[in-house]
Length: 382
Ligand SMILES: NC(=O)c1ccc[n+]([C@@H]2O[C@H](COP(=O)([O-])OP(=O)(O)OC[C@H]3O[C@@H](n4cnc5c(N)ncnc54)[C@H](O)[C@@H]3O)[C@@H](O)[C@H]2O)c1
Ligand SMILES: [Zn+2]
Image (tube, rainbow, N blue to C red; front, side, top):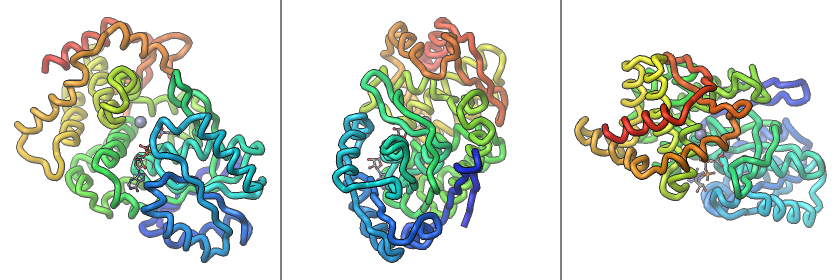
């Protein structure tokens, strides 16, 4: 088992445990974290409950916990204050107190929402994450950010709130959709570009087997990606500097999601396009070589072309064009307006994270409308 310790401040120290099959043995781990017979409230959605509710419930009962499940509907639109409010009602009805352990069983939506409720109900309940999507396992469960969306902007209302532990079981990825698998792999590519040439190479070598859900490789990916994110988060727990680097691909990516529509474009596709556009801007500025841009582009186009198995490079090209379709009808003025709303902009200056070399990205704070349009125009023509 991989055990990754996170020590922010003393009272917030916790570990991320990564082990295949650990969901069935969770009772034993939880006993070490909390009092025996404590009350546990599991927050999840109907899909994840149907898949893993029984396994988790029997594991918790073996640990002699009193278990209650509360379900919220599936989907980003339920990561809201009104769902949080519904959860407060349910917790009050069930007389949850400061000793009640909240367990988030699900993807990033459930993790962010449950974390937000745990941070705010009675000024803080103990929290455990059991992330069940690849994105949640390598990204959203790492680093203590919790939030709900505001109708005008995503993740606008939130906090930093650390769990008592994160229990990551790679086995649950067996049921994940291809789209959600890719959403997670794109985040792995992102962290590799930001901080590890070796991990990037490893991803290049193993991508087709990862797409086939080779469980050993997925476990390795999770361990490596979590370690890399932890290194960054520990240096900058409150996102004052270094942690902003994790935004590579996301300035353009988030704006594309907002412009094209969340239903049409997956987060992975948006971030993949974001990395491509941002790499092109970096190249136009002479900050990134053509070779680096090509490397990033190759791995991403492979990802969006090759299910179940990669075929010839010509079919790669045609499918790659299809993700470029999304940028074809963008209204540049409205797109720029959306970009200016990004929380990550610094003192009103448009800030992007641009790549310089594998393992090296840096913030650039004077991005202009003209260069964004130029990069989009060039990519549209390719
Ligand atoms: N807190 C952070 O630092 C952080 C970082 C990145 C993303 N996020 C947030 O994460 C959210 C996205 O998370 P996500 O991509 O996991 O989406 P999600 O939570 O919506 O999950 C995607 C889909 O997968 C289903 N699912 C979950 N586990 C499954 C399993 N094992 N098998 C089959 N289906 C399963 C879900 O029910 C859902 O339909 C966004 O709200 C984003 O803002 C937060
Ligand atoms: Zn992301």
